[in-house]
Length: 126
Length: 298
Image 1 (cartoon, rainbow over the protein chains, first blue to last red):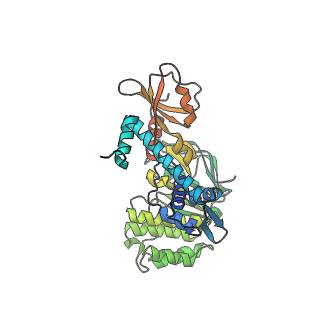
Image 2: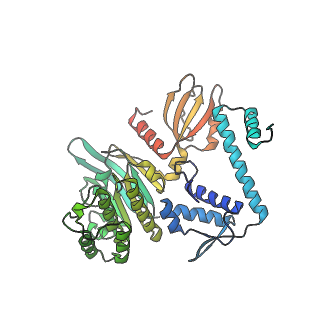
Image 3: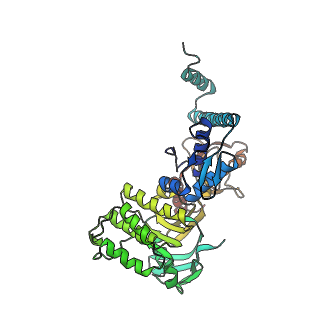
């Protein structure tokens, strides 16, 4: 689940881990009551600082995605469909922002980008 | 917050060529502190001084709250050390090595040592001197971990090991850290390896510590700026300018530290514009830091 973690990215690792869980909850990949790996398991497996995993789980708990039960572990909470839809919209917006930033760097214009998006999605296809 | 390692104005000299001068270093309790620097910059010497293996000319050092070298014997009982060179007796078998070390440490965790030995696939009856380089590296880490230390001092613990062994050794280290709030001081020149798990970074060059910061601040703050025009050298900029050089064509490339997004307004002046802010990863940041430290000072 966490195979796309990129330590070289300027996005902190705890944020990458939290984001991956948010996405999995929003998409239904992680069902309510599902157990997340323990801090020790995940830190060992990903070779990251245990504090990084703790911070990711705490952030997720603060946002209502998971519940940390003392001694038992960390579990996915029941998240309302509207909240999951909001999270997917947030992820979509982030993807687009990244795309726009990349396009600006490469000198691709807005029109060219829009045409490419329409083409790829299949809207303007003959 | 107390520091697990605290060094103030440490001085040391060997011969005429090498010197550690006024070194200050602070490792917060519970941190995983990455100690970076090119070969020969003084990392190993600093570690040897810190463990009382060399005598400083001047300076103050405390480890886990006690003074070095005065209390070094009691300190070392609480410190796990993996030196750069294999230090175990080549004529002892794996089993004998473990029994020998267990006798020194009241905190020795026998079941875990055995579990790690199996996990690391270390043959019980093999002489240390006959182990492969990777097996030696694993046994050295095992011995340091099984004593359940409060502080681990690791000098290039994965240097020269293959990727599979490196992964095993670091996983065991991180497993230990997640069980127990131990502090880790790890020196390496494998920068990308430290990027995954260190939360503090100290960079040494030429016997000096040139920077000591939380990892996120270093990583997020070091940027390369593409600038149109040639702004005046900043007097009171909110960031630290490490280097500037003309870019091809017009404009300049700046290398800065402590950058934050809102600082873009600094380049709003006439004839000057900020084209792009480029993220650097730790390795690039490290190389640029060294380059600017060694280059002519601005």
